[in-house]
Image (cartoon, rainbow, N blue to C red):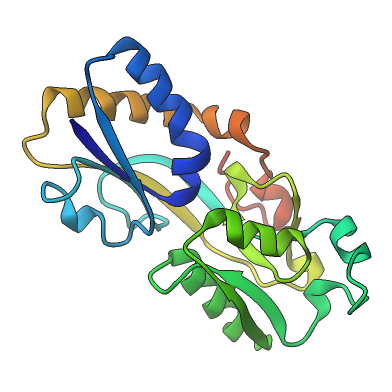
Length: 224
Protein backbone atom coordinates (compact mmCIF):
# COMPACT_ATOMS: atom_id res chain seq x y z
CA UNK A 1 0.00 0.00 0.00
CA UNK A 2 1.14 3.56 -0.79
CA UNK A 3 -0.09 6.35 1.52
CA UNK A 4 -0.49 9.69 -0.23
CA UNK A 5 -1.18 13.08 1.36
CA UNK A 6 -2.32 15.99 -0.80
CA UNK A 7 -4.06 19.38 -0.68
CA UNK A 8 -7.85 19.30 -0.87
CA UNK A 9 -8.14 20.96 -4.28
CA UNK A 10 -5.50 18.77 -5.91
CA UNK A 11 -6.98 15.73 -4.19
CA UNK A 12 -10.36 16.62 -5.65
CA UNK A 13 -9.56 17.76 -9.19
CA UNK A 14 -6.00 16.89 -10.17
CA UNK A 15 -4.90 13.65 -8.54
CA UNK A 16 -7.93 11.32 -9.03
CA UNK A 17 -7.55 10.95 -12.82
CA UNK A 18 -3.82 10.47 -12.35
CA UNK A 19 -4.45 7.69 -9.82
CA UNK A 20 -6.94 6.09 -12.19
CA UNK A 21 -4.42 6.00 -15.02
CA UNK A 22 -1.70 4.71 -12.69
CA UNK A 23 -3.84 1.93 -11.20
CA UNK A 24 -4.94 0.85 -14.64
CA UNK A 25 -1.34 -0.12 -15.25
CA UNK A 26 -0.65 -1.40 -11.71
CA UNK A 27 -3.93 -2.92 -10.47
CA UNK A 28 -2.25 -4.80 -7.59
CA UNK A 29 -0.96 -1.62 -5.94
CA UNK A 30 -3.26 -0.16 -3.29
CA UNK A 31 -3.22 3.61 -2.74
CA UNK A 32 -4.62 5.33 0.35
CA UNK A 33 -5.07 9.07 -0.18
CA UNK A 34 -5.72 11.67 2.53
CA UNK A 35 -6.55 15.30 1.75
CA UNK A 36 -6.15 18.32 4.00
CA UNK A 37 -3.75 21.09 4.95
CA UNK A 38 -0.31 19.95 3.86
CA UNK A 39 1.83 22.27 5.99
CA UNK A 40 2.49 19.52 8.54
CA UNK A 41 2.30 16.48 6.25
CA UNK A 42 5.97 16.35 5.12
CA UNK A 43 7.05 16.04 8.75
CA UNK A 44 4.90 12.90 8.99
CA UNK A 45 6.54 11.10 6.08
CA UNK A 46 7.30 7.52 6.99
CA UNK A 47 4.99 7.64 10.00
CA UNK A 48 1.71 8.48 8.24
CA UNK A 49 2.58 9.08 4.59
CA UNK A 50 4.82 7.61 1.91
CA UNK A 51 4.28 10.51 -0.48
CA UNK A 52 3.06 14.06 0.06
CA UNK A 53 2.15 16.71 -2.50
CA UNK A 54 2.46 19.96 -0.54
CA UNK A 55 2.28 23.69 -1.16
CA UNK A 56 5.16 26.00 -0.21
CA UNK A 57 6.05 29.69 -0.66
CA UNK A 58 7.67 30.27 -4.04
CA UNK A 59 11.31 29.17 -4.06
CA UNK A 60 11.24 27.87 -0.50
CA UNK A 61 9.83 24.39 -0.86
CA UNK A 62 11.83 21.26 -0.24
CA UNK A 63 11.12 18.10 -2.19
CA UNK A 64 10.74 17.80 -5.97
CA UNK A 65 9.31 20.85 -7.72
CA UNK A 66 6.18 19.98 -9.71
CA UNK A 67 4.67 23.31 -10.77
CA UNK A 68 4.05 26.88 -9.71
CA UNK A 69 0.56 28.07 -8.78
CA UNK A 70 -0.40 31.73 -8.57
CA UNK A 71 -2.75 32.60 -5.71
CA UNK A 72 -5.78 34.50 -7.05
CA UNK A 73 -8.63 36.35 -5.39
CA UNK A 74 -12.02 35.04 -6.50
CA UNK A 75 -15.68 35.90 -6.05
CA UNK A 76 -19.03 34.84 -7.43
CA UNK A 77 -20.08 35.75 -10.94
CA UNK A 78 -22.57 38.49 -11.84
CA UNK A 79 -25.51 36.14 -11.33
CA UNK A 80 -24.57 35.87 -7.66
CA UNK A 81 -24.86 39.61 -7.17
CA UNK A 82 -28.18 39.75 -9.01
CA UNK A 83 -29.58 37.34 -6.43
CA UNK A 84 -28.44 39.45 -3.47
CA UNK A 85 -31.55 41.38 -2.52
CA UNK A 86 -29.93 42.31 0.81
CA UNK A 87 -27.05 44.31 -0.70
CA UNK A 88 -26.64 45.61 -4.22
CA UNK A 89 -23.07 46.80 -3.56
CA UNK A 90 -20.37 44.93 -5.48
CA UNK A 91 -18.83 42.46 -3.07
CA UNK A 92 -15.21 43.53 -3.47
CA UNK A 93 -16.20 47.13 -2.67
CA UNK A 94 -17.76 46.25 0.68
CA UNK A 95 -16.08 47.36 3.90
CA UNK A 96 -15.19 45.42 5.82
CA UNK A 97 -14.54 42.94 3.03
CA UNK A 98 -16.09 39.51 3.80
CA UNK A 99 -13.64 36.66 3.17
CA UNK A 100 -14.04 32.88 3.12
CA UNK A 101 -10.87 30.99 4.03
CA UNK A 102 -9.47 27.73 5.29
CA UNK A 103 -8.46 27.24 8.95
CA UNK A 104 -5.17 28.42 10.43
CA UNK A 105 -2.23 26.58 8.93
CA UNK A 106 -3.37 27.27 5.37
CA UNK A 107 -0.79 29.24 3.39
CA UNK A 108 -3.47 31.01 1.33
CA UNK A 109 -5.24 32.14 4.51
CA UNK A 110 -1.98 33.61 5.81
CA UNK A 111 -1.26 35.40 2.55
CA UNK A 112 -4.79 36.77 2.22
CA UNK A 113 -4.78 38.27 5.71
CA UNK A 114 -1.25 39.68 5.34
CA UNK A 115 -2.09 41.24 1.96
CA UNK A 116 -5.30 42.87 3.22
CA UNK A 117 -3.61 44.16 6.36
CA UNK A 118 -0.66 45.53 4.38
CA UNK A 119 -3.09 47.32 2.07
CA UNK A 120 -4.95 48.66 5.14
CA UNK A 121 -8.11 47.12 3.72
CA UNK A 122 -10.76 46.42 6.40
CA UNK A 123 -11.92 42.81 6.29
CA UNK A 124 -13.90 40.30 8.29
CA UNK A 125 -13.79 36.52 8.38
CA UNK A 126 -17.20 35.52 7.05
CA UNK A 127 -16.63 31.77 6.67
CA UNK A 128 -14.01 29.19 7.68
CA UNK A 129 -14.00 25.55 6.60
CA UNK A 130 -11.71 22.63 5.81
CA UNK A 131 -14.03 21.91 2.88
CA UNK A 132 -13.04 23.18 -0.54
CA UNK A 133 -16.61 22.74 -1.79
CA UNK A 134 -18.07 24.74 1.12
CA UNK A 135 -15.65 27.66 0.73
CA UNK A 136 -16.26 27.84 -3.01
CA UNK A 137 -20.04 27.60 -2.53
CA UNK A 138 -20.00 30.61 -0.20
CA UNK A 139 -17.92 32.58 -2.71
CA UNK A 140 -20.11 31.50 -5.63
CA UNK A 141 -23.19 32.88 -3.87
CA UNK A 142 -21.56 36.28 -3.55
CA UNK A 143 -21.24 36.05 0.23
CA UNK A 144 -17.46 36.42 0.44
CA UNK A 145 -14.27 36.55 -1.59
CA UNK A 146 -11.75 33.75 -1.32
CA UNK A 147 -8.32 32.71 -2.63
CA UNK A 148 -7.80 29.90 -5.13
CA UNK A 149 -5.10 28.57 -7.44
CA UNK A 150 -5.06 30.05 -10.94
CA UNK A 151 -4.25 26.70 -12.53
CA UNK A 152 -7.45 25.08 -11.27
CA UNK A 153 -9.69 28.10 -11.13
CA UNK A 154 -13.32 27.26 -10.22
CA UNK A 155 -15.61 27.83 -13.22
CA UNK A 156 -18.40 29.35 -11.10
CA UNK A 157 -16.14 32.12 -9.79
CA UNK A 158 -14.56 35.20 -11.36
CA UNK A 159 -11.00 36.32 -10.81
CA UNK A 160 -10.29 39.61 -9.00
CA UNK A 161 -7.12 41.68 -9.35
CA UNK A 162 -5.73 45.07 -8.45
CA UNK A 163 -8.16 46.53 -11.00
CA UNK A 164 -10.90 45.43 -8.59
CA UNK A 165 -9.11 46.98 -5.64
CA UNK A 166 -7.62 43.72 -4.39
CA UNK A 167 -4.00 43.49 -3.21
CA UNK A 168 -1.58 41.23 -5.05
CA UNK A 169 -0.83 37.75 -3.72
CA UNK A 170 2.32 35.58 -3.93
CA UNK A 171 2.84 32.42 -5.94
CA UNK A 172 3.21 28.96 -4.43
CA UNK A 173 5.39 26.02 -5.37
CA UNK A 174 3.78 22.58 -5.48
CA UNK A 175 6.35 19.98 -4.45
CA UNK A 176 6.45 16.21 -4.12
CA UNK A 177 7.95 14.76 -0.95
CA UNK A 178 9.05 11.13 -0.63
CA UNK A 179 9.58 9.12 2.52
CA UNK A 180 12.99 7.61 3.14
CA UNK A 181 13.20 3.94 2.16
CA UNK A 182 10.23 4.35 -0.19
CA UNK A 183 8.91 1.07 -1.56
CA UNK A 184 9.08 0.21 -5.25
CA UNK A 185 5.32 0.74 -5.50
CA UNK A 186 5.69 4.16 -3.90
CA UNK A 187 8.51 5.09 -6.25
CA UNK A 188 6.43 4.09 -9.26
CA UNK A 189 3.51 6.26 -8.10
CA UNK A 190 5.83 9.17 -7.28
CA UNK A 191 7.38 9.08 -10.76
CA UNK A 192 3.93 8.94 -12.35
CA UNK A 193 2.65 11.92 -10.35
CA UNK A 194 5.79 13.94 -11.02
CA UNK A 195 5.66 13.35 -14.76
CA UNK A 196 1.95 14.01 -15.22
CA UNK A 197 1.61 17.04 -12.94
CA UNK A 198 4.66 18.67 -14.49
CA UNK A 199 2.96 18.37 -17.89
CA UNK A 200 0.39 20.89 -16.67
CA UNK A 201 -2.54 19.23 -18.43
CA UNK A 202 -4.50 17.38 -15.69
CA UNK A 203 -5.76 20.47 -13.87
CA UNK A 204 -6.84 22.16 -17.09
CA UNK A 205 -8.94 19.13 -17.99
CA UNK A 206 -10.39 18.97 -14.49
CA UNK A 207 -11.43 22.62 -14.12
CA UNK A 208 -10.93 26.01 -15.66
CA UNK A 209 -7.76 28.04 -15.56
CA UNK A 210 -6.76 31.68 -15.30
CA UNK A 211 -3.70 33.18 -16.92
CA UNK A 212 -1.97 34.62 -13.88
CA UNK A 213 0.05 37.04 -15.99
CA UNK A 214 -3.17 38.70 -17.15
CA UNK A 215 -4.07 39.53 -13.55
CA UNK A 216 -0.99 41.62 -12.87
CA UNK A 217 0.23 44.55 -14.97
CA UNK A 218 3.88 43.71 -14.30
CA UNK A 219 3.48 40.13 -15.56
CA UNK A 220 3.68 37.54 -12.82
CA UNK A 221 4.89 34.16 -14.05
CA UNK A 222 2.11 32.18 -15.74
CA UNK A 223 1.66 29.19 -13.47
CA UNK A 224 -0.45 27.08 -15.84
